[in-house]
Image (cartoon, rainbow, N blue to C red; front, side, top):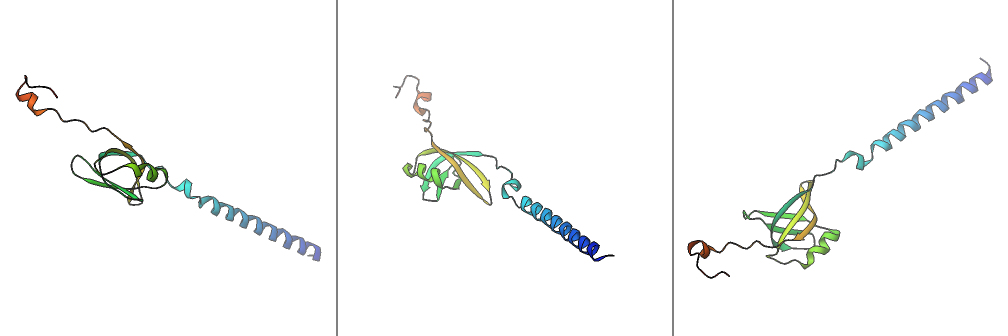
Length: 127
């Protein structure tokens, strides 16, 4: 082979290797997208009364006396500052990475219990 042919083959081989290396690098970057790998978490709700509120968590107690602890941050943390123990709330949350994270906290009205005296004595004064 002539010297010119050898140089041409060498340059062509180097261009081929660099081109395939760039394609492999582009594929690795594409696969590293963390947003594409995580599925969207399904939102759930819980109802109860506030037991405690801190800068990073809210604890509520359900009707069955079960306590739920939710992580809070950002706008949710700002919104729960006005809550106090005993307030009735509905918490929308997602589960992931071993914890429940509140996405929204809304105050709800407490349902009044039926008057137990009214059932025993229908003529009793209504409150």
